[in-house]
Amino acid sequence: MFRNVAAVVLVAFLGLVAGVAYAATVTPTSYEATTAFTVPAYSRDAIRLAAVARSQHVPGVRVRVINARAFNVTGQIRSGCGPGMTVFAPL
Image 1 (cartoon, one colour):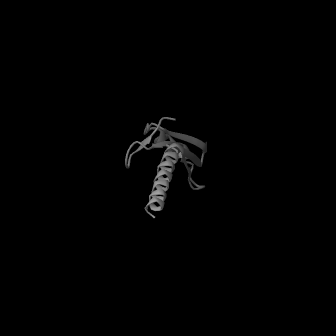
Image 2 (cartoon, helix red, strand yellow):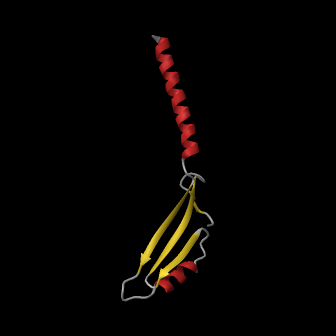
Image 3 (cartoon, helix red, strand yellow):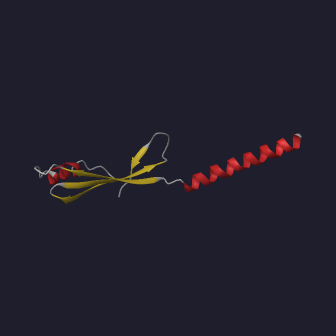
């Protein structure tokens, strides 16, 4: 009886260790997030707003103007630097 319980505990522990090791190698450490901004039809300020966003000079953030009414902000986010830490990585 004790051998059966010990064998089940050993197999469960080995499965846990193998699962954690697999998850550590498969989990992505960086993400790319894109947000699209569109201004109302009566406004043509997307180019001006994109210029303001670019002037912030945040590493890892790219601002792309689509047309006079829309622009995209893309940021590459690198996680895994520590608990609760997120770092913008250069694009």
